Image 1 (cartoon, helix red, strand yellow):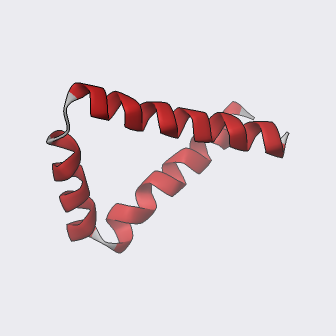
Image 2: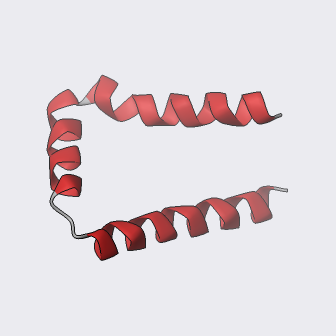
Length: 58
């Protein structure tokens, strides 16, 4: 199950650079310009969304 989840993460993470490398590069550049607090907030929201998805899926 853990390997399946890791595979899904890699699949989803790879879609953006595969479909739009320039857009992905621009998004990563904007992320590097965020302050630490802003980046932590992005991480908190992504983690929260993942927990909610797992709760509703399981």
